[in-house]
Length: 578
Image 1 (cartoon, rainbow, N blue to C red):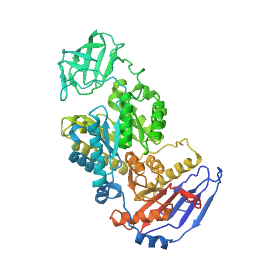
Image 2 (image 1 turned 45 degrees about the vertical axis):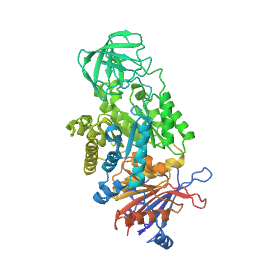
Image 3 (image 1 turned 135 degrees about the horizontal axis):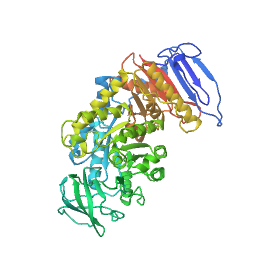
Image 4 (image 1 turned 30 degrees about the vertical axis):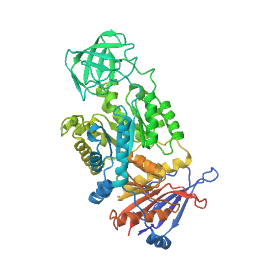
């Protein structure tokens, strides 16, 4: 049973700041006998001061008797449980993994293998496949979660109002040879025609001149426009390559991108239909393609709040120069960011991609929003069973930058080596995380105060202190008790060394936290009695052999009591399992 430590501090102030290195009142702090708590504000006023209370060897006998009768369920996913048993607290992978589901991995057996390999989020790209296909995949993943004990979140990725090549009728990719002549048309026809592809936007050729370049998927193949025939374009291949189904088009003139999306809405009619589908299927994330400003993100979030009974998080994809110009407002408005490096690399010089990626990652952490690094992480594994060394270095750099998640696209969706590619991400991120700890390279978060109410500022300060305390004292783990995930997210923002276990009784919160760096969400019943919550959860974990006597854990809570008699709801405690 865990015993509360001997010193309790209650912070009641506008901006409490803790310096654990200096101790309390000039005295050093014991490594496992401290608890902190911040009280509710009364009548909107802030009282300043510090109150210290001594508690020596306290153990609640009523809680102990209650535990003997308690039969709870620990909603910890099977992959994290096995990893914890095998590697211990510090061996848990902190970087989350997102897999795009496609024809190569949509069977129940393949989905289970990806989940076992560490897939945290399954992404469905609405550019491809039918509504029935997507629904079938969603049902399979939900069944795996319910029947096999996984906790894989679901994400749909909207198509966006971008000019694209529709399916050309061939079963897979089509090779464009040097000098070959191709027609790009808006005419609709069944099957395939030689040297003909269809564009899904009637006005795709408006403003395009003879001599302009037509680039496929950021450089997979390049054509020169040699003739305009009505709304169609006749083009000559100048850079041979592959035309994949649903490949993206872009036009260039005199070395500059021809702007094409000014008149197109961020969300098309099809996107809104896909969003309704996502709501009905109860997905956890919606990734918006080709976001241009914060207004579109805010509009979708407001729409979801009125139409969906569960909390669906909105991720903004950064893939255009326009989005970079409004980066801060987009990051603030969204629930997270996906850096779509493939499309972004079409609009900015290639040599700028590494610095832009790092800057976006830094901004996301500044505003406490999860960030996914996407596109071409292991592109060679679409065809080959092993990655290039440069690709492994690219993955390592993303982990070094403390990105929340890494994403596979074609590697898992259409490649035959999707499970191997996921294994490469898992092993590389795990090794890089270990190296960062060994080299003491944890990134110091500069003092950035989030724009929030006073209670939220208190929560932020508590979490900053908690992360520093966990690192400085060498604690084994951080336990967060949360209904909405706020404090788990704030602690994750600090990138502490110990793993973060977020106990919540809200399934939407659990699935949303699957994207947060270093957070292992656990679904469990919670009550207003925090001591009962803590002791029950520790007891459940201990009975599973996941925690042992002598382990020291830092406990943080943002549970707001429904009873007005209890005023303390934000707290830090350190407990030793005995």
